[in-house]
Image (cartoon, rainbow, N blue to C red; front, side):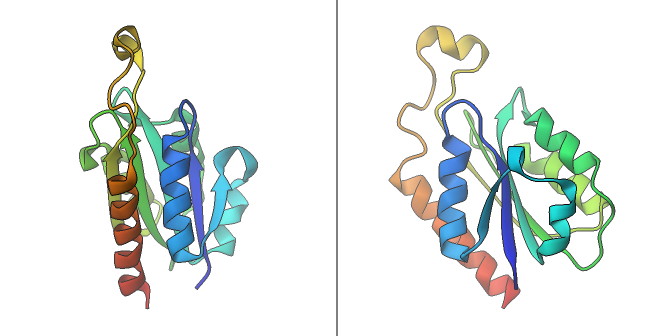
Length: 151
């Protein structure tokens, strides 16, 4: 099974670091959203989509990318996000939109991350040092749980 992870990581590299851990565990290709076209989806059986969260939504470029995807058949996906709150509720848009495109969603992950968006910048940010080793272990455990679903 060929696995790819498409991610958008902007401010602090939080999402990229989580994507690297997941990709390492799954032996997946790591694909920065800035470097891919929508046709790349055809090359993979399982695709991860990851983003930092900006005002309760994934990055607008990832949202646009997904909205412009053609419908698919027989493709599996998982989603992951990093944010100041680290809540899986922020994954809802990704899961719903990908499901609407025909993807079977087989998992989701979220963790807290260093956040300097909006007013948090004035106080030096939230969650300094996040993601941390515990978050990386949790991301690896998440990736391992995906292996069980695809084998």
